[in-house]
Image (cartoon, rainbow, N blue to C red; front, side):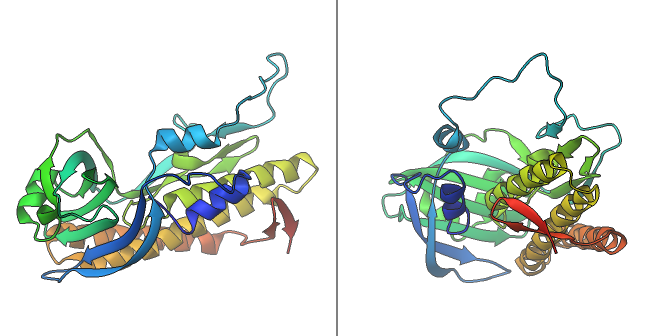
Length: 291
């Protein structure tokens, strides 16, 4: 889902005000969070889009080919492997799986549902009047659905899981060095519980390009320190948001262990930020200026 923070930002960056207009819209969010919590409905505003559709919409129709003779001055790591000196720090062990679902006729196609359970949490996202996707974190979808009071009532049939992936927050360190930067999932990965990964990735790309452009124009080496600090601060903010969810989601061992891991991540970020040089630049549009 792309919400009111991510979608306007993407439209502005790619200068496409009509981008992703004709897609399924989520207008309501139903949340049952915490032991024995009753579902609470609230207004929401987001569109449902696959990664393939999003990339196709923003990808330029023509990308100039790089000069094979000229050596690149910068390497951007958007995927692994990273430079040998980089270490990934993982704060948690929770895994997620996604499965296609058929919704009941009575299910609202404009409402997403979120529910916490003893052994994890479920997120139901409709993408058509009677179909959607179920994200299960902490245990298999079928196991969590058996314990569900809210989301199971919306589903007529749950298909087979399409593979698993880590749902815990993680960050690489260092994030940059002379002649290279890490960005995207190579730099850090967010827990899907917060829904802020896409917007952060766009802002991160803006900063990365601004840092490289400033260095190419004779900027000081502390631009790299600024990039590291900004990304670490963004990751720390994300962990703070996650903490609220995992503190209130449940009291079972999974919730306690993941909360401990998040707290460990917050302490790690605080130590990194206190030892660094801080923020010496700010973005003005797509350019960096000293503060």
